[in-house]
Image (cartoon, helix red, strand yellow):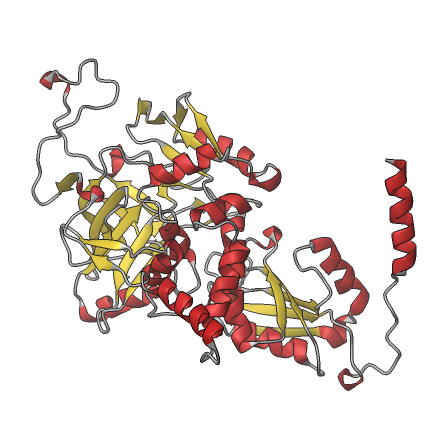
Length: 511
């Protein structure tokens, strides 16, 4: 299912009983964060919140704030237009593992998979809803809409002559020690200047003033690689940022796709409809035509970096100020009735836990292509995305768990994982208590631990040096003789099935 606007997604959530409207004015400075944090901490992630009257410096914004939109298992599935993430993962797995058909039934099934791909490629259109209100900063024009709360919208004397800017958007100051307001769900579009490959990423953006922000693309991110090429040539780097539209765009911006693979291909596949792209006003970059808000600009490689932060991050701690590029705004366009999507990060569980869990499920079939012994993977909330990873495997030979650790550390953003715990296939990796039981029961620390070194998340404050750290893998599987285990491995305590059935029958009769 494709959503043609963020408002359409909100309507679907409301009809499903997944949305709470907040009519009371709430400040974008801290108050929305406090309400959203309490909601996210509820069992199952609470409800999505639509703040209908967010205030910016005491003034009500015309744009409502949507937050915690993908903060539950059900809402992530709805954002992806599916009954469940498991169903999408199974479909994607069949597509990846497709083989030449050997009969009519297999041919029909393969054709069905091919039809699902016909919408993957994005297509360009001339215009779209994201252009309903357009302002280019190189050609200033009087504001044509009144400020919220004006006594008479038809009275020209109530109009504010200043052009719209970032300061008109209900951008949150999330936590008390944050360095300012931050866009927290900006979908950032950049292009490789050598290959022309497009990338869609999600990087926080600190607002410096009405026409500039920080551009927090970390050292190992694709957009940072694009940026380095522009810094080498000295040319201005065009950047386009959009918010809203189909929520699948935000999900795809966080997806761990290989460098060079267009995230809008995945978006088109998931929504069963090609993403219609429209050219920006001040660059050749393209953004979804149905986006709610578009911010265009450039990074000038000839100017110095600027400190960005502090920021209350997904690690649960504030990340300290570090120098990053500055994005200069050249245009802002938006729908007439645009919704401003936001999220907050902090001490888990938060909304990002559900988005990260969905990504793992969706891309598990791809992991299995390289490591067929993997049964399941989980990123527990306490690991704040990638600090801690549980992996279950069907073990068939000695040292197989160590092979998995080394392999995963070499795959994309898994390089940031500090701790990997490998268990046998009968262990539910989504049950942290069960994993910890097997960790404590099945390991000898010296024999079963593997230390390694490699890149670290630049947000990790625990490393002695930024972006460089160590990693620990623990083999909590049943040990084999070839792994230096010279005893008989004991059996796990289990009741026999006949007794369990007899007691089940007894308890049912008591009801």
